Every structure is written in structure tokens, then in C-alpha cells.
Image 1 (tube, one colour):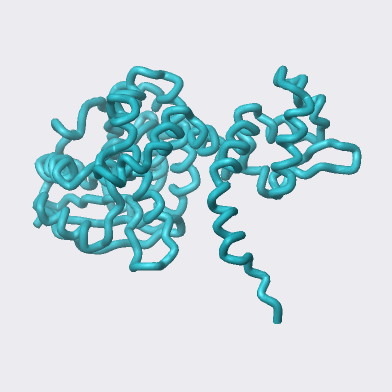
Image 2 (spheres, helix red, strand yellow):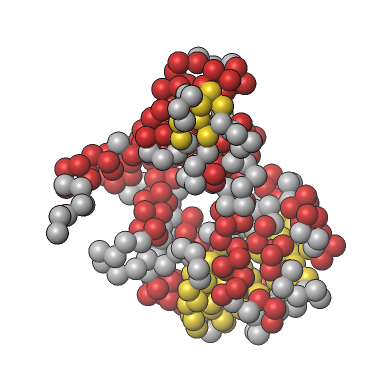
Length: 338
């Protein structure tokens, strides 16, 4: 029986050149190529005319992507969609268009280019490169903020069905989505129970675009939008406080401060629900381990093991009760007041 696995050097070369593939996908996405060929194959000349770019260079890009199974070239030199190209469409149910654009966004690329600084110092490369945190950077740059919000909404759209299916949110009457972005998660939670009320809490420049998301889900009349900082104060008295992809953004001391605000706002019967990756044992393939390096580069955060979550919650006055697996890469870590 022949071994079809690539030789170690060949496998490593695929990984080493991965950044080139990522950049090619980003450019193709920025040019909207998947949307342009959604109704049928087109030549590179037609696609170049749509975008005002160099025809033969665009052909070379599409030829390279087609060699990877992203787009396909027919016998007439026209390019069409493949299964891998379909999620690059803006209207695809499982669209990763926003992720592709975010991967190629200048600040993201430049921060990752300084990964060695983070490894050497333990400090965020982003702050080192740009002289400010990524939160402050996006707050004053609408385009970068829009790309980030789009990728958060896109990730939510793919992950949310599995999250809602994995946990009994319908047991709650009022839910606060702490750092809930544009409201995709709280909208899905509210749809599990017609009498449930929700509060979407995030920074002003983030929740500014939440109303269309809530309205499209038919829950705008049941969801209050509150802006502020989760380091200061949170809406009080809710049954559940949900933090999706919040805790992994911060170091332990900052996490204890955020969780402390939840503890202060929460009644005795309340539930704390942290939605993040949970790092798996050594050597096991795990997207959380790769996300952990992104946290190292971009901010002072980290992904955590179950025991690390347990210790973190205890410091903030909570007891970790259960970790619920979901269909996606994230788990739901449930805590109650100790």
C-alpha cells in the first residue's frame, strides 16, 4: 500500500507558503470575483473590466487559485465557482468573505509580521507596531472597524446555530449579551423564547450598527441597546450574562475585572455563560491553540484550558458548573455565583 501523505518537507512547504494563498484569496475577495461569476463562468478579461484591473495579471491570479481548487478554468479560458469558492460569495449562507478581507487587512498583516516581538516579550505585537491597542485603533478608523464588525457578525452567523442548540437559553427571562457587537447572538437567543427580553451591551461605535441586525431577526422590540464599558458597570438584574469571545481578549487581571462587573450585576440565581474555545490536551489538533497565538499578537488575551477557566472564575467569585460542547469550535462555560 503506497503512502499518499506528502513528505515532511513538502508538507512544511505548504504551510510555509500559506500566507501567499491567504493573500491571493483576500485579493480575489476584495475584487468580488466569486459574486461576479455566481451566474456563470467569465473570462479574466470580463472580470478585469468589471474591476478596472490588469487583465493578464488577473488571469494569473485566477489560474493559481484554480490550481488549489478555488475557482475552476474551463476549456474556453473562463473561470467559474467551485465548492471552495462558493463561501467567498457575499450572499452565501456560510460566507467567509469577511474573514478573507480581515486576513488581508493592513493592520492585521503588519501585526502578525511582528510575531517574533510577541514571542520574545509576551507583549502584543499590534501595540508595538502601531503604538496603540487594536481597540483604540479601530475606534478612530471606520473602515477597519467595519471590517472587524463584519467578521464578527460572519463568525456569529456560522457559530450561533450550534451554540443555541447546545444550551437551554429558553430557561431565561432576561439575557445581557456583554460585548455583544452588532447583536447577532442576542437576536438568536431571543428567538428561542417569545417572552424573553434582551440587552445588547457594547461600546458606542460598535452598537451603532445593531438596529438593522435586531430588526431583521424580528426582535428589535425586545432588545434594549446599552452602550458603555464592561470594565465599569453592566445592566443589573438579568438571569444570564453572556460573554462570547470576550474573555479570550484579555489577560487574567483584566478578565477578573470584567467578571467582577458581571458578579456585581448578577442576582443570586443568575448564570454566567462564557463562549470561547477551550484548549485541548497536548498534541491534539485544536483551533483554539492557533487562536491563542492570534490573541498573543493582537492584544493581551489568551485562550484557556478548562482548569484555567475554573481558576479564573473562582477569583471573580464564581463556581464553574459545566462546560458544554457545541457543534463548532467554541464551548459554553457555565458559572454561578459562589
